[in-house]
Length: 510
Image 1 (spheres, rainbow, N blue to C red):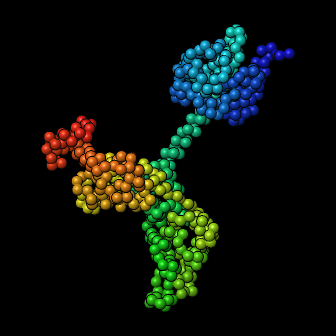
Image 2: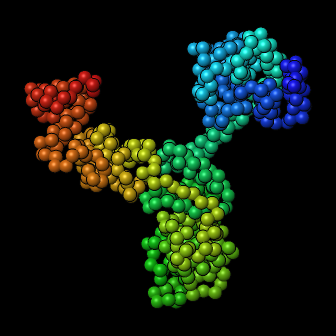
Image 3: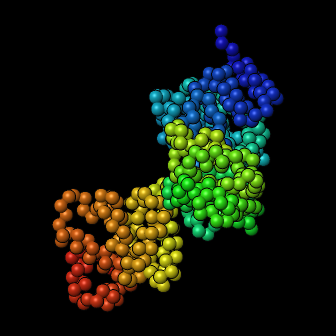
Protein backbone atom coordinates (compact mmCIF):
# COMPACT_ATOMS: atom_id res chain seq x y z
CA UNK A 1 0.00 0.00 0.00
CA UNK A 2 1.45 3.38 -1.00
CA UNK A 3 2.24 5.97 1.66
CA UNK A 4 0.19 9.19 1.94
CA UNK A 5 1.81 12.11 0.08
CA UNK A 6 2.41 13.99 3.36
CA UNK A 7 4.52 11.10 4.69
CA UNK A 8 6.47 10.89 1.44
CA UNK A 9 7.22 14.60 1.53
CA UNK A 10 8.36 14.35 5.18
CA UNK A 11 10.64 11.47 4.15
CA UNK A 12 12.12 13.59 1.33
CA UNK A 13 12.78 16.50 3.70
CA UNK A 14 14.43 14.11 6.18
CA UNK A 15 16.73 12.75 3.44
CA UNK A 16 17.60 16.27 2.29
CA UNK A 17 18.34 17.40 5.87
CA UNK A 18 20.72 14.44 6.41
CA UNK A 19 22.43 15.19 3.11
CA UNK A 20 22.89 18.85 4.09
CA UNK A 21 24.51 17.84 7.40
CA UNK A 22 26.84 15.14 6.09
CA UNK A 23 27.80 16.29 2.57
CA UNK A 24 30.94 18.40 2.14
CA UNK A 25 30.80 18.57 -1.65
CA UNK A 26 28.07 21.05 -2.64
CA UNK A 27 27.95 19.80 -6.23
CA UNK A 28 27.43 16.20 -5.04
CA UNK A 29 24.83 17.43 -2.52
CA UNK A 30 22.70 19.06 -5.23
CA UNK A 31 22.79 15.91 -7.37
CA UNK A 32 21.85 13.79 -4.34
CA UNK A 33 18.89 16.05 -3.51
CA UNK A 34 17.56 15.77 -7.07
CA UNK A 35 17.96 11.98 -6.99
CA UNK A 36 15.99 11.88 -3.71
CA UNK A 37 13.20 14.05 -5.16
CA UNK A 38 12.86 12.05 -8.38
CA UNK A 39 13.03 8.67 -6.61
CA UNK A 40 10.82 9.34 -3.59
CA UNK A 41 8.22 11.49 -5.38
CA UNK A 42 8.14 9.26 -8.45
CA UNK A 43 8.76 12.07 -10.94
CA UNK A 44 10.34 11.74 -14.40
CA UNK A 45 13.23 14.16 -13.98
CA UNK A 46 14.47 17.00 -11.78
CA UNK A 47 16.59 19.99 -12.75
CA UNK A 48 18.45 22.68 -10.82
CA UNK A 49 19.71 25.73 -12.70
CA UNK A 50 22.09 28.45 -11.55
CA UNK A 51 22.01 32.02 -12.77
CA UNK A 52 25.21 33.25 -14.46
CA UNK A 53 24.69 36.93 -15.26
CA UNK A 54 21.58 36.78 -17.50
CA UNK A 55 21.77 33.09 -18.40
CA UNK A 56 20.41 30.09 -16.49
CA UNK A 57 22.57 26.98 -16.81
CA UNK A 58 21.73 23.45 -15.61
CA UNK A 59 24.23 22.60 -12.87
CA UNK A 60 22.60 19.44 -11.47
CA UNK A 61 19.94 17.09 -12.81
CA UNK A 62 18.35 13.69 -12.43
CA UNK A 63 17.00 11.91 -15.48
CA UNK A 64 19.04 13.99 -17.98
CA UNK A 65 22.16 13.03 -19.91
CA UNK A 66 25.28 15.25 -19.96
CA UNK A 67 24.45 16.31 -23.53
CA UNK A 68 20.88 17.23 -22.56
CA UNK A 69 22.14 19.23 -19.56
CA UNK A 70 24.50 21.23 -21.78
CA UNK A 71 21.64 22.08 -24.12
CA UNK A 72 19.44 23.35 -21.28
CA UNK A 73 20.38 27.03 -21.18
CA UNK A 74 17.84 29.87 -20.94
CA UNK A 75 18.19 33.61 -20.84
CA UNK A 76 16.35 35.32 -17.97
CA UNK A 77 12.77 35.84 -19.19
CA UNK A 78 13.05 33.12 -21.85
CA UNK A 79 10.83 30.04 -21.63
CA UNK A 80 9.11 28.92 -18.41
CA UNK A 81 12.40 28.61 -16.50
CA UNK A 82 13.53 32.06 -17.60
CA UNK A 83 10.21 33.64 -16.65
CA UNK A 84 10.36 32.11 -13.14
CA UNK A 85 13.86 33.56 -12.72
CA UNK A 86 12.72 36.97 -14.00
CA UNK A 87 9.55 37.21 -11.89
CA UNK A 88 10.61 35.30 -8.79
CA UNK A 89 7.21 33.55 -8.85
CA UNK A 90 6.62 29.79 -9.09
CA UNK A 91 4.94 28.33 -12.16
CA UNK A 92 2.80 25.23 -12.77
CA UNK A 93 2.17 23.92 -16.29
CA UNK A 94 -0.45 21.13 -16.06
CA UNK A 95 0.34 19.85 -19.59
CA UNK A 96 3.47 20.91 -21.46
CA UNK A 97 1.96 19.70 -24.76
CA UNK A 98 -0.58 22.53 -24.51
CA UNK A 99 1.88 25.23 -23.47
CA UNK A 100 3.50 27.11 -26.40
CA UNK A 101 5.91 28.88 -24.03
CA UNK A 102 7.55 25.59 -23.02
CA UNK A 103 10.77 25.44 -25.07
CA UNK A 104 12.23 22.03 -24.06
CA UNK A 105 15.81 23.15 -24.82
CA UNK A 106 17.15 19.86 -23.43
CA UNK A 107 15.05 17.91 -26.00
CA UNK A 108 14.45 15.30 -23.28
CA UNK A 109 10.65 15.37 -23.69
CA UNK A 110 10.31 14.74 -27.39
CA UNK A 111 8.68 11.33 -26.78
CA UNK A 112 6.51 12.52 -23.86
CA UNK A 113 2.92 13.10 -24.98
CA UNK A 114 1.62 14.68 -21.75
CA UNK A 115 3.57 15.84 -18.72
CA UNK A 116 3.15 18.43 -15.97
CA UNK A 117 6.03 20.84 -15.32
CA UNK A 118 6.62 22.54 -11.96
CA UNK A 119 9.28 25.23 -11.56
CA UNK A 120 10.12 27.31 -8.45
CA UNK A 121 12.73 30.05 -7.89
CA UNK A 122 15.69 29.66 -5.55
CA UNK A 123 16.23 33.05 -3.92
CA UNK A 124 18.64 34.57 -1.42
CA UNK A 125 18.32 38.10 0.00
CA UNK A 126 15.59 38.88 -2.54
CA UNK A 127 17.70 37.85 -5.55
CA UNK A 128 16.80 34.85 -7.71
CA UNK A 129 20.00 32.79 -7.96
CA UNK A 130 18.54 29.72 -9.65
CA UNK A 131 15.50 27.51 -10.22
CA UNK A 132 14.31 24.05 -9.18
CA UNK A 133 11.97 22.16 -11.51
CA UNK A 134 10.47 18.69 -11.96
CA UNK A 135 8.54 16.80 -14.62
CA UNK A 136 5.52 15.06 -13.02
CA UNK A 137 2.84 12.81 -14.44
CA UNK A 138 -0.38 14.78 -15.06
CA UNK A 139 -2.94 14.80 -12.25
CA UNK A 140 -5.51 16.90 -10.41
CA UNK A 141 -4.51 20.55 -10.26
CA UNK A 142 -5.05 20.66 -6.48
CA UNK A 143 -2.49 17.87 -5.97
CA UNK A 144 -0.03 19.57 -8.33
CA UNK A 145 -0.48 22.89 -6.47
CA UNK A 146 0.31 21.11 -3.20
CA UNK A 147 3.44 19.61 -4.77
CA UNK A 148 4.46 23.06 -6.05
CA UNK A 149 4.27 24.39 -2.47
CA UNK A 150 6.43 21.49 -1.29
CA UNK A 151 9.05 22.33 -3.99
CA UNK A 152 9.10 25.93 -2.73
CA UNK A 153 9.94 24.59 0.76
CA UNK A 154 12.78 22.47 -0.68
CA UNK A 155 14.08 25.49 -2.63
CA UNK A 156 14.14 27.58 0.57
CA UNK A 157 16.07 24.85 2.40
CA UNK A 158 18.58 24.60 -0.43
CA UNK A 159 19.04 28.36 -0.95
CA UNK A 160 22.15 28.69 1.24
CA UNK A 161 23.80 25.61 -0.28
CA UNK A 162 23.02 26.81 -3.82
CA UNK A 163 24.37 30.30 -3.03
CA UNK A 164 27.55 28.71 -1.66
CA UNK A 165 27.92 26.58 -4.80
CA UNK A 166 27.31 29.62 -7.02
CA UNK A 167 30.00 31.61 -5.17
CA UNK A 168 32.40 28.68 -5.49
CA UNK A 169 31.81 28.49 -9.26
CA UNK A 170 32.37 32.24 -9.64
CA UNK A 171 35.65 32.00 -7.73
CA UNK A 172 36.76 29.12 -9.94
CA UNK A 173 35.91 31.08 -13.09
CA UNK A 174 37.77 34.15 -11.80
CA UNK A 175 40.79 32.03 -10.89
CA UNK A 176 40.72 30.38 -14.31
CA UNK A 177 40.52 33.78 -16.04
CA UNK A 178 43.36 35.13 -13.88
CA UNK A 179 45.53 32.11 -14.65
CA UNK A 180 44.86 32.53 -18.37
CA UNK A 181 45.71 36.23 -18.14
CA UNK A 182 48.97 35.45 -16.34
CA UNK A 183 49.84 32.77 -18.89
CA UNK A 184 49.30 35.23 -21.73
CA UNK A 185 51.32 37.93 -19.94
CA UNK A 186 54.16 35.49 -19.34
CA UNK A 187 53.99 34.42 -22.96
CA UNK A 188 54.22 38.02 -24.14
CA UNK A 189 56.94 38.88 -21.61
CA UNK A 190 59.29 36.21 -22.93
CA UNK A 191 58.46 36.69 -26.60
CA UNK A 192 61.34 38.43 -28.35
CA UNK A 193 60.54 40.99 -31.01
CA UNK A 194 61.65 38.69 -33.83
CA UNK A 195 59.19 35.91 -32.94
CA UNK A 196 55.86 36.76 -34.54
CA UNK A 197 52.61 34.93 -33.92
CA UNK A 198 49.42 35.11 -31.89
CA UNK A 199 47.83 31.73 -32.61
CA UNK A 200 47.04 29.45 -29.68
CA UNK A 201 49.90 27.06 -30.53
CA UNK A 202 52.46 29.89 -30.39
CA UNK A 203 51.00 31.26 -27.16
CA UNK A 204 51.60 27.84 -25.64
CA UNK A 205 55.21 28.02 -26.82
CA UNK A 206 55.64 31.45 -25.16
CA UNK A 207 54.18 30.07 -21.92
CA UNK A 208 56.62 27.14 -22.01
CA UNK A 209 59.54 29.52 -22.58
CA UNK A 210 58.41 31.43 -19.50
CA UNK A 211 58.21 28.22 -17.46
CA UNK A 212 61.67 26.88 -18.32
CA UNK A 213 63.77 30.03 -18.82
CA UNK A 214 64.84 30.55 -15.21
CA UNK A 215 65.65 26.86 -14.59
CA UNK A 216 68.92 25.12 -15.58
CA UNK A 217 66.97 22.30 -17.30
CA UNK A 218 68.08 20.94 -20.67
CA UNK A 219 65.56 21.82 -23.39
CA UNK A 220 64.81 19.89 -26.58
CA UNK A 221 63.10 21.99 -29.27
CA UNK A 222 61.36 19.95 -31.95
CA UNK A 223 59.90 21.13 -35.22
CA UNK A 224 60.30 21.11 -38.98
CA UNK A 225 63.14 22.96 -40.65
CA UNK A 226 62.44 26.70 -40.87
CA UNK A 227 59.99 26.91 -37.94
CA UNK A 228 62.30 29.12 -35.82
CA UNK A 229 63.94 26.72 -33.38
CA UNK A 230 67.02 28.92 -32.90
CA UNK A 231 64.83 31.96 -32.16
CA UNK A 232 63.15 30.00 -29.36
CA UNK A 233 66.56 28.91 -28.03
CA UNK A 234 67.71 32.52 -27.95
CA UNK A 235 64.48 33.56 -26.22
CA UNK A 236 65.12 30.98 -23.48
CA UNK A 237 68.71 32.16 -23.05
CA UNK A 238 67.96 35.89 -22.93
CA UNK A 239 65.07 35.37 -20.49
CA UNK A 240 67.35 33.48 -18.07
CA UNK A 241 69.93 34.57 -15.53
CA UNK A 242 72.59 33.60 -18.12
CA UNK A 243 71.51 36.40 -20.49
CA UNK A 244 74.75 38.37 -19.95
CA UNK A 245 76.89 35.30 -20.72
CA UNK A 246 77.64 33.79 -24.16
CA UNK A 247 75.04 32.17 -26.39
CA UNK A 248 76.89 29.81 -28.73
CA UNK A 249 75.08 28.06 -31.60
CA UNK A 250 76.34 24.98 -33.44
CA UNK A 251 74.63 23.41 -36.45
CA UNK A 252 75.57 19.76 -36.02
CA UNK A 253 74.33 18.85 -39.51
CA UNK A 254 76.69 21.39 -41.14
CA UNK A 255 79.88 19.95 -39.60
CA UNK A 256 81.72 16.90 -41.00
CA UNK A 257 81.71 13.98 -38.58
CA UNK A 258 85.52 14.09 -38.44
CA UNK A 259 85.47 17.68 -37.11
CA UNK A 260 82.44 17.81 -34.85
CA UNK A 261 84.27 16.47 -31.78
CA UNK A 262 86.97 19.13 -32.18
CA UNK A 263 84.31 21.83 -32.68
CA UNK A 264 82.39 20.84 -29.57
CA UNK A 265 85.20 19.91 -27.17
CA UNK A 266 88.29 21.62 -28.64
CA UNK A 267 91.67 19.99 -29.30
CA UNK A 268 95.24 20.04 -28.10
CA UNK A 269 98.21 21.06 -30.24
CA UNK A 270 99.38 18.16 -32.41
CA UNK A 271 96.34 16.00 -31.69
CA UNK A 272 95.77 15.54 -35.44
CA UNK A 273 97.15 16.81 -38.74
CA UNK A 274 96.61 20.55 -38.94
CA UNK A 275 96.23 21.03 -35.18
CA UNK A 276 99.03 23.59 -34.91
CA UNK A 277 97.77 25.09 -31.65
CA UNK A 278 95.46 24.39 -28.77
CA UNK A 279 91.87 25.34 -29.59
CA UNK A 280 88.89 25.78 -27.29
CA UNK A 281 85.67 24.05 -28.25
CA UNK A 282 82.13 25.41 -28.19
CA UNK A 283 81.49 24.05 -24.69
CA UNK A 284 84.36 26.11 -23.30
CA UNK A 285 83.37 29.19 -25.29
CA UNK A 286 79.84 28.94 -23.90
CA UNK A 287 81.02 28.58 -20.28
CA UNK A 288 78.53 30.31 -17.97
CA UNK A 289 76.05 30.71 -20.81
CA UNK A 290 74.04 28.53 -23.18
CA UNK A 291 75.07 26.15 -25.96
CA UNK A 292 72.53 25.61 -28.72
CA UNK A 293 73.02 22.29 -30.54
CA UNK A 294 70.92 22.52 -33.69
CA UNK A 295 70.02 19.31 -35.58
CA UNK A 296 71.25 17.16 -32.72
CA UNK A 297 69.78 14.12 -34.46
CA UNK A 298 72.54 14.23 -37.09
CA UNK A 299 75.55 13.58 -34.83
CA UNK A 300 77.26 10.17 -34.94
CA UNK A 301 77.28 7.57 -32.18
CA UNK A 302 80.91 8.22 -30.98
CA UNK A 303 80.10 11.91 -30.38
CA UNK A 304 76.82 10.94 -28.72
CA UNK A 305 78.78 8.96 -26.09
CA UNK A 306 80.97 11.97 -25.25
CA UNK A 307 78.00 14.34 -25.25
CA UNK A 308 76.16 12.08 -22.82
CA UNK A 309 79.10 12.26 -20.38
CA UNK A 310 79.17 16.05 -20.56
CA UNK A 311 75.44 16.26 -19.83
CA UNK A 312 75.79 13.87 -16.89
CA UNK A 313 79.05 15.07 -15.31
CA UNK A 314 79.68 18.53 -16.87
CA UNK A 315 83.26 17.36 -17.57
CA UNK A 316 85.07 16.53 -20.83
CA UNK A 317 88.57 16.32 -22.36
CA UNK A 318 89.77 18.11 -25.47
CA UNK A 319 90.60 15.92 -28.47
CA UNK A 320 94.11 14.59 -27.88
CA UNK A 321 94.12 15.78 -24.25
CA UNK A 322 93.86 14.05 -20.89
CA UNK A 323 93.14 16.94 -18.55
CA UNK A 324 89.46 17.18 -17.53
CA UNK A 325 87.79 20.46 -18.44
CA UNK A 326 84.74 21.63 -16.50
CA UNK A 327 82.09 23.73 -18.20
CA UNK A 328 79.03 25.37 -16.63
CA UNK A 329 76.84 25.30 -19.73
CA UNK A 330 73.08 25.11 -20.21
CA UNK A 331 72.41 22.89 -23.23
CA UNK A 332 69.49 23.67 -25.55
CA UNK A 333 69.14 21.13 -28.37
CA UNK A 334 66.92 21.13 -31.44
CA UNK A 335 66.03 18.65 -34.14
CA UNK A 336 63.75 18.25 -37.14
CA UNK A 337 64.31 14.48 -37.12
CA UNK A 338 62.12 11.80 -35.58
CA UNK A 339 64.41 10.76 -32.73
CA UNK A 340 62.14 7.89 -31.70
CA UNK A 341 62.61 6.31 -35.15
CA UNK A 342 66.39 6.86 -34.92
CA UNK A 343 66.42 5.16 -31.52
CA UNK A 344 64.51 2.21 -33.03
CA UNK A 345 67.01 1.81 -35.89
CA UNK A 346 69.99 2.17 -33.53
CA UNK A 347 71.37 5.46 -34.88
CA UNK A 348 70.57 7.50 -31.76
CA UNK A 349 71.25 6.54 -28.15
CA UNK A 350 68.19 6.14 -25.98
CA UNK A 351 70.01 7.32 -22.83
CA UNK A 352 71.12 10.51 -24.60
CA UNK A 353 67.56 11.09 -25.78
CA UNK A 354 66.27 11.03 -22.21
CA UNK A 355 69.05 13.38 -21.09
CA UNK A 356 68.12 15.88 -23.81
CA UNK A 357 64.34 15.50 -23.55
CA UNK A 358 64.01 16.93 -20.03
CA UNK A 359 61.78 19.80 -21.19
CA UNK A 360 60.50 19.34 -24.77
CA UNK A 361 59.01 22.23 -26.76
CA UNK A 362 57.27 21.51 -30.07
CA UNK A 363 57.01 24.25 -32.68
CA UNK A 364 54.04 24.15 -35.07
CA UNK A 365 54.60 24.16 -38.82
CA UNK A 366 53.48 27.31 -40.65
CA UNK A 367 50.66 25.41 -42.37
CA UNK A 368 49.26 24.73 -38.86
CA UNK A 369 49.23 28.44 -37.93
CA UNK A 370 47.52 30.02 -40.93
CA UNK A 371 46.31 32.99 -38.87
CA UNK A 372 49.93 34.09 -38.37
CA UNK A 373 50.86 34.18 -42.06
CA UNK A 374 49.72 37.77 -42.63
CA UNK A 375 51.38 38.97 -39.40
CA UNK A 376 54.66 37.37 -40.51
CA UNK A 377 54.33 38.69 -44.06
CA UNK A 378 53.78 42.27 -42.80
CA UNK A 379 56.79 41.92 -40.48
CA UNK A 380 59.06 40.75 -43.30
CA UNK A 381 57.66 43.43 -45.62
CA UNK A 382 58.69 46.12 -43.13
CA UNK A 383 62.10 44.49 -42.68
CA UNK A 384 62.96 44.36 -46.40
CA UNK A 385 61.44 47.75 -47.12
CA UNK A 386 64.12 49.18 -44.84
CA UNK A 387 66.86 46.91 -46.17
CA UNK A 388 66.24 47.72 -49.85
CA UNK A 389 65.01 51.30 -49.32
CA UNK A 390 61.55 50.51 -50.73
CA UNK A 391 58.16 52.11 -49.97
CA UNK A 392 55.82 49.14 -50.46
CA UNK A 393 52.69 49.82 -48.44
CA UNK A 394 50.61 46.67 -48.69
CA UNK A 395 50.11 43.17 -50.06
CA UNK A 396 47.28 42.70 -52.57
CA UNK A 397 44.30 40.49 -51.79
CA UNK A 398 45.15 37.89 -54.50
CA UNK A 399 48.70 37.67 -53.10
CA UNK A 400 47.32 37.15 -49.58
CA UNK A 401 45.00 34.44 -50.88
CA UNK A 402 47.93 32.69 -52.53
CA UNK A 403 50.00 32.81 -49.35
CA UNK A 404 47.21 31.47 -47.13
CA UNK A 405 46.40 28.66 -49.61
CA UNK A 406 50.03 27.52 -49.97
CA UNK A 407 51.31 24.62 -47.82
CA UNK A 408 54.73 26.19 -46.97
CA UNK A 409 57.05 23.15 -46.84
CA UNK A 410 59.92 25.51 -45.91
CA UNK A 411 57.86 27.12 -43.13
CA UNK A 412 58.69 30.65 -41.87
CA UNK A 413 62.08 30.66 -43.60
CA UNK A 414 60.40 30.06 -46.98
CA UNK A 415 57.83 32.80 -46.27
CA UNK A 416 60.59 35.27 -45.45
CA UNK A 417 62.46 34.42 -48.67
CA UNK A 418 59.22 34.80 -50.66
CA UNK A 419 58.55 38.28 -49.23
CA UNK A 420 62.15 39.36 -49.82
CA UNK A 421 61.87 38.29 -53.47
CA UNK A 422 58.50 40.03 -53.83
CA UNK A 423 59.92 43.28 -52.41
CA UNK A 424 62.69 43.16 -55.01
CA UNK A 425 60.30 42.25 -57.85
CA UNK A 426 57.60 44.84 -57.10
CA UNK A 427 57.70 47.91 -59.32
CA UNK A 428 55.18 49.96 -57.29
CA UNK A 429 53.91 50.26 -53.73
CA UNK A 430 51.92 46.99 -53.75
CA UNK A 431 53.03 43.36 -53.72
CA UNK A 432 50.88 41.56 -56.28
CA UNK A 433 50.40 37.84 -56.85
CA UNK A 434 52.79 37.85 -59.82
CA UNK A 435 55.59 39.21 -57.56
CA UNK A 436 55.58 36.01 -55.47
CA UNK A 437 57.73 32.99 -56.34
CA UNK A 438 56.49 30.60 -59.07
CA UNK A 439 55.85 27.83 -56.50
CA UNK A 440 53.05 29.93 -55.00
CA UNK A 441 51.63 30.84 -58.41
CA UNK A 442 51.35 27.26 -59.62
CA UNK A 443 47.70 26.24 -59.56
CA UNK A 444 48.42 22.60 -58.69
CA UNK A 445 50.65 23.66 -55.79
CA UNK A 446 48.40 26.33 -54.29
CA UNK A 447 44.91 25.28 -55.37
CA UNK A 448 44.36 28.89 -56.46
CA UNK A 449 43.34 28.37 -60.07
CA UNK A 450 41.70 31.34 -61.78
CA UNK A 451 39.28 28.93 -63.46
CA UNK A 452 38.99 25.44 -61.96
CA UNK A 453 38.49 23.61 -65.30
CA UNK A 454 41.44 22.50 -67.41
CA UNK A 455 42.32 24.19 -70.69
CA UNK A 456 41.93 27.82 -69.63
CA UNK A 457 42.39 30.07 -72.64
CA UNK A 458 44.77 33.03 -72.82
CA UNK A 459 41.98 35.63 -72.99
CA UNK A 460 40.54 34.44 -69.65
CA UNK A 461 43.92 34.57 -67.94
CA UNK A 462 44.70 38.03 -69.37
CA UNK A 463 41.30 39.30 -68.17
CA UNK A 464 41.97 37.96 -64.66
CA UNK A 465 45.36 39.67 -64.58
CA UNK A 466 43.89 42.91 -65.95
CA UNK A 467 41.15 42.86 -63.31
CA UNK A 468 43.71 42.49 -60.49
CA UNK A 469 45.76 45.45 -61.80
CA UNK A 470 42.70 47.73 -62.15
CA UNK A 471 41.28 46.77 -58.73
CA UNK A 472 44.67 47.44 -57.11
CA UNK A 473 44.80 50.88 -58.72
CA UNK A 474 41.26 51.69 -57.55
CA UNK A 475 42.08 50.53 -54.00
CA UNK A 476 45.20 52.69 -53.96
CA UNK A 477 43.25 55.78 -55.08
CA UNK A 478 40.08 55.06 -53.02
CA UNK A 479 37.87 54.40 -56.04
CA UNK A 480 38.89 57.57 -57.91
CA UNK A 481 38.83 56.50 -61.57
CA UNK A 482 40.64 59.64 -62.78
CA UNK A 483 43.53 59.08 -60.37
CA UNK A 484 43.66 55.37 -61.26
CA UNK A 485 43.75 56.35 -64.97
CA UNK A 486 46.82 58.53 -64.40
CA UNK A 487 48.54 55.82 -62.35
CA UNK A 488 47.96 53.22 -65.08
CA UNK A 489 49.04 55.56 -67.88
CA UNK A 490 45.87 55.17 -69.94
CA UNK A 491 42.77 57.24 -70.81
CA UNK A 492 39.50 57.48 -68.86
CA UNK A 493 37.55 56.25 -71.89
CA UNK A 494 39.62 53.07 -72.11
CA UNK A 495 39.58 52.49 -68.35
CA UNK A 496 35.81 53.02 -68.09
CA UNK A 497 35.35 50.56 -70.97
CA UNK A 498 37.54 47.92 -69.24
CA UNK A 499 35.82 48.53 -65.86
CA UNK A 500 32.40 47.97 -67.43
CA UNK A 501 33.55 44.89 -69.36
CA UNK A 502 35.12 43.28 -66.27
CA UNK A 503 32.17 44.15 -64.01
CA UNK A 504 34.22 46.22 -61.56
CA UNK A 505 32.42 48.70 -59.29
CA UNK A 506 34.78 51.58 -58.36
CA UNK A 507 32.50 52.81 -55.54
CA UNK A 508 33.31 49.65 -53.57
CA UNK A 509 36.88 50.90 -53.10
CA UNK A 510 36.11 54.42 -51.85
